[in-house]
Amino acid sequence: MDLKPISIRNVIVRTLLLGLFLLALRFSYLVAIAGKSCSLSDFCFFDISSPSSISAASFSAVPVDGSAPKTPRQSKEWISAVRFYSSVFRDLISDAFLSPRSKSLCVDTASGDDVFALREIGVKNALGIYRKAALPLVKSGLPHRIPFGPDTFDFVFIGRGRFDEFPRPLDVVAEIERVTKPRGHVVFHVKANDSYSFNSFMELFDKCVLLRMHDVDGFQNHMPRVREIVLQKESDVAIHRHLVRKDKGGAARKCIVPEYKQKLVVHAEPLIEEEPLKPWITLKRNLNNIKYLPSIVDISFRNRYVYVDVGARGYGSSIGSWFRKQYPKQNRTFQVYAIEADKSFYPEYKIKKAVTLLPYAAWVKNETLSFEINRDPDSKLEGKGRGMGRIQPGQAAVGNGEDKEVVKIRGFDFADWLKSTVSPVDYVVMKMDVEGTEFDLIPRLFETGAICLIDEMFLECHYNRWQRCCPGQRSSKYDKTYGQCLELFRSLRQSGVLVHQWW
Image 1 (spheres, rainbow, N blue to C red):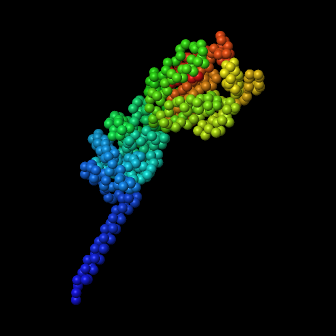
Image 2 (cartoon, rainbow, N blue to C red; image 1 turned 45 degrees about the vertical axis):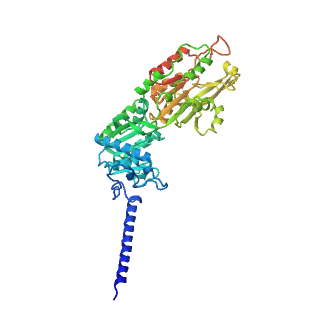
Image 3 (cartoon, rainbow, N blue to C red; image 1 turned 90 degrees about the vertical axis):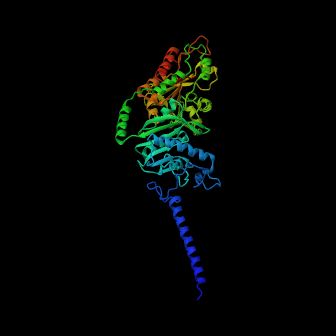
């Protein structure tokens, strides 16, 4: 009997079975590594990184984005990034901020170059998150909604200046502090380059303390210098003590403007010391001399950006004509509040969706007020269709005269509203033009501590100025003098408030 055909058939069958076994093994590998079946607790059961030296070959070993023929790991930028982060992480290991045993997370990393660098230098339990997964290095997750439980990581890293761009950094900080273990380390690479932005950054944290801050050479053209900030999450006991101290401090109504804000006042334009004979010219020209805060410092790392126009009148009066067009915003989106008691301006705000109108009078408490609109001689001369309104406390009679209109309006405690609307980690710009009520509102802001919430103020102070229509005559509408206005500005600046003379 001839066995040769049977032997050949057996070889073929065994070869096919071996091939099926290899395919099954490959399938298991893909499911475990790329199919999201592994969790952070074991970081999969296949080690995707190699302890070999960083080379172009190792970069192309596991493609991150299969949509393009050339993956990011084959690019020069990828190689430069991995080399840069490898050097950074080695320095952190040598300074005991990171160890090969650290369970590590890289936040908002699109391609996972920093994760790869961690694994290359021996930190095997490293993973990244980004809105779009790039497995096996990066899992899907958002910075303000990190998909891991509390106290998970020993080390958290945010590079490339990405933290500078987050619209609500306070939410991101809260998540980072939540997933970091007590005594764990958090490292940021940011663009912060002045005292204002650094203090703004530190004010976001409740549970972390600063360990180190220094500048390093970056690898990207838009970030030639990188500020590296190393924080440590405090122990549970230290966090509790810190929060208790913070609560006790918050109970005090008054506040002290932080020193880093007080130092900015010296950069402001000088006040006009001598009363101008033609204030309608001098004060208006002075607007060109204003040194805006964003032209002096970096306003990054504020949680929200808010503009409050107190006495806004119409949209085009100052919001549209000045703040929208002239105020330097450093590409930040501001939430705008318009506070106006004169109802004749309300209709135009209905079509301005980006502005929140408060149809009340800013005052020192919640009460009904008389709102008096006078047409003064200057307003007639300038052809203004409606005079300026001012509030009068008490129950003045409602009536009308040739040059006067008096109506009842609702006044609200402006200082309390401000404290309930913004926080110390927000960036707040305020313009105040309230027809003499500033002498009531400013002291109330100091009394309640709300003054410390304001980063920059533009104040028009009303006094018995010389009238344009009638040479040699002062306005009888206000009883304050220019000297009293000047003293108000001086007291604000001496307290550390960056205030400008508005017209």
